[in-house]
Image (cartoon, rainbow, N blue to C red):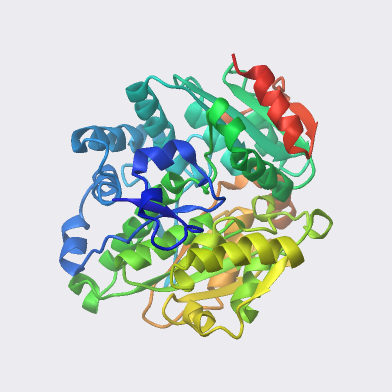
Length: 482
């Protein structure tokens, strides 16, 4: 399996790379994002063979379709080391539970940091450690977080040999619990950097540093954000697991392999839902992929109008679902690459030139835009703070279930797109304790807190405050790499 950049010129076969190369590289040298040359295909017979596999073995089967430069026995061992009941709380790893008729929640937040990012980050940490040991090298990870990626990455990488983490986050824009999870870590290989700006500034810095090829090579810079293909690839697995669980509970055509399901995904950076797109391209019978946004509705605007219009820092709203306070969706480029027939030169024109020049591009008159809702099955919706409060309260009162603010965005939008006979799965984003203030506003009581996190907000903090400037981050990295 070879990988190409979304901005690669056609016919340049020399630019194709294998998995372990892009694992450590992150962003492509031309500024694009890596995708496989083709998506491996699965059929109904394969789905039935995979249906009853334990999650770790399902992960191995899917990942082995994309990774051919790690021996199969080693890859299987990595998957089994990663996805255990001890780490994720249940033997199902991502259990599905019904909320109401036809609507399910898929629990993705039982990992070490109580957020869905653990599902991929725990694997990524083990892959990094394996490959770096094999090469005898080190890696300095530069990341950006709006809330959950940072803690998931740091908990996955703390103590890992040959790995340092430099994690940027928007100063004051995360919940107190999220900040405490990250800033309380005292490990020598973990560096937290609070940026005086918003998440998109953090993300721009990561891309700018990654595009400085001399600095990137000198300091061996890698990424853990979902611009790293390995993150997104790992997330593909739980779409298959959710499908198997939902169709096992269905009747009629469930066992024929043709029963379809839909997924609603709270989305800011488009990574989580892009994994659903990949699963669908592989042949998983997904009917609709529903993109749920908060007040920062760049993605909803695109799927309604065909216009992709990024916002600046001043126009990025601070909301009660802060992990989605994003106005520049990095992974969106991967989907548009597929949408436009994998034309790398056109992608470069759109994402480098048009976005750089006018901050937007318009595909509303392009025939491909109709395919977004047709061939690719995308629809969208928006949720506000009042919607979140109402949905959290309704879910608690009717179903005795407390959901976090981002999952509430998903549930609200999912109900607008449900279809008779098609199970709708909402991907849970995080446990409610991470957003306790809003939960208490909604239901009048604080959400339950896992015992291991008692008093976390009172622990000593270790964080460096820096301006939203790539050069400042580069200086800090250089000063802290020994």
